[in-house]
Amino acid sequence: MPEEAWLAEKVGRLLARKGAVLVCGGMGGIMEAACRGAVGEGGLTIGILPGDDISAANPYVKLPIATGMGIGRNIIIVRTARAIIAINGKYGTLSEIAYALQLGKPVFALSPWVEVPGIRRVATPEEAVDAALKAIKLSG
Image (cartoon, rainbow, N blue to C red; front, side):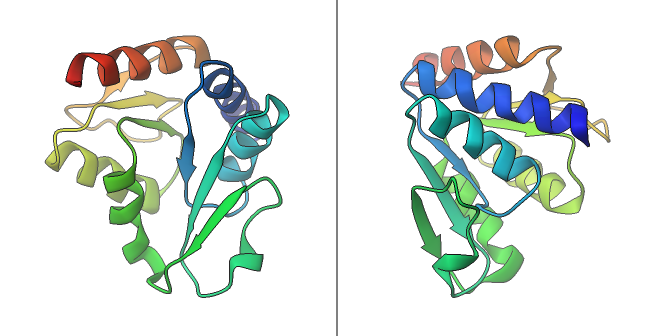
């Protein structure tokens, strides 16, 4: 987990430097690391939370959205994002990848724990961010 947290924090920093908004599930772990990186560079972070309490968001979420939907909030995360960068993860991340692929959104994976047809594997945070932002520009 420490390496994945470092990757996530770096992704957050790079997204903020390029003016992108970081959208995530707003909780701890990888999500918190990504938010910490983005906020450290002055970026905007949106946390789409599973519960009803916005105070459950990690301390780096600037705009918490309480859904009260539990894991159902994953579709909202994907619908809100224009590209997905998945860093390791488990079944929640896998569901977000599946939703994104079904919706035709680009998915990039750093340190994936499972191979899924349709995702593009990337080696570095820089490659992930550059590819995601390029995909967004190409899609309009």
